[in-house]
Length: 87
Image 1 (cartoon, helix red, strand yellow):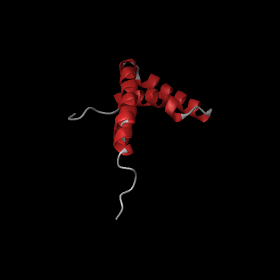
Image 2 (cartoon, one colour):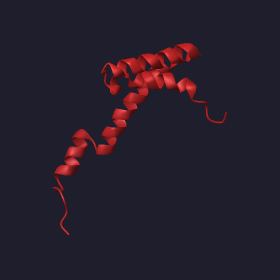
Image 3 (cartoon, rainbow, N blue to C red):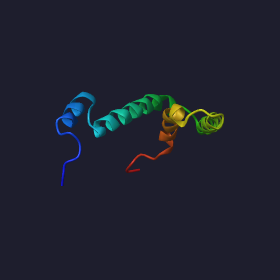
Image 4 (cartoon, helix red, strand yellow):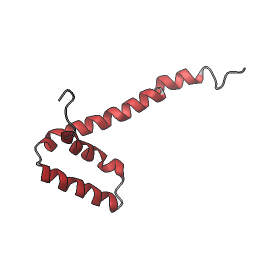
């Protein structure tokens, strides 16, 4: 069975742009950093303020804003709602 691709180009491209896995990890690490940066602000919100934030996110999404644009804020607001492990 013949090998697919060109054996010399693949490793060279991986050195330049990284493997597919490395690119995914970099992308998601940035999203986690963005979410964690918003967590402190979110922890100070009351339950009523969190509910208002969710309504606001839904309204922004319904107006056509892309989910990627509001995902970090939305997930940061969800963090206080998730019980800590072992509790």
